[in-house]
Image 1 (cartoon, rainbow, N blue to C red):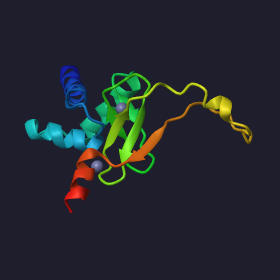
Image 2 (spheres, protein in one colour; image 1 turned 90 degrees about the horizontal axis):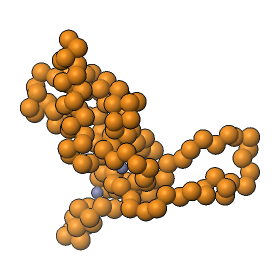
Image 3 (cartoon, protein in one colour; image 1 turned 90 degrees about the vertical axis):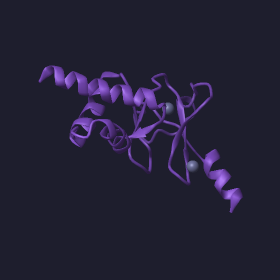
Image 4 (tube, rainbow, N blue to C red; image 1 turned 180 degrees about the vertical axis):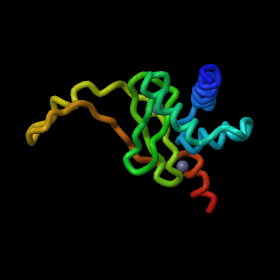
Length: 131
Ligand SMILES: [Zn+2]
Ligand SMILES: [Zn+2]
């Protein structure tokens, strides 16, 4: 049982790392299912949660969509395509002074932040010019 668990966890990890995209849990499951039709959706979802907790992958909480799982571990920001919902990394330096720009905290203790840009990806832009 223990060994089987390790194999499944490894499979989930390698899938997220190998596809080099920001995958939803559903996408990870659909991908693994092609080669491993007996794997359960619950198993994939559970292992994604464990791997994110362990810091082997990163969970990206998308404001208006399902969570995504990220192979890039260093702190970085994202852009979401407003047409297809795909999430991409933004190549920019880390913003370090955002907390200092807050004038009135309204009693909140600020812990951290995510930056999510909105955009239209090259694939969707190409589709739009075709039409
Ligand atoms: Zn798009
Ligand atoms: Zn990312």
